[in-house]
Amino acid sequence: FPQALAAKVWLRRHGIPSTLYLGVALNKAGAAAPDSPAMEAHAWLRCGPLVVTGARGSERFTVVARFGEGD
Image (cartoon, rainbow, N blue to C red; front, side, top):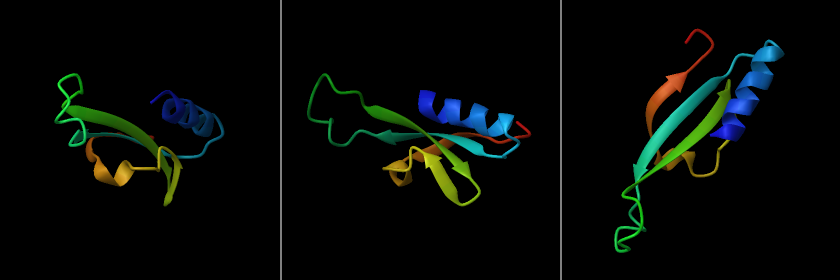
């Protein structure tokens, strides 16, 4: 999350629109381990079709919030 937020601020300062996504997913790998969280969260930043930060694994997360320039 900190990397995506920092990149969003940097892009905004330079007049470049972007969208910050927050997503969640069930932690299927950790289901057998009692100390593992049941859910995972992830943040990624898009600028048009380009994912600027957080691209790896973002496709497995369900978007729960999106913050664009007008938000």
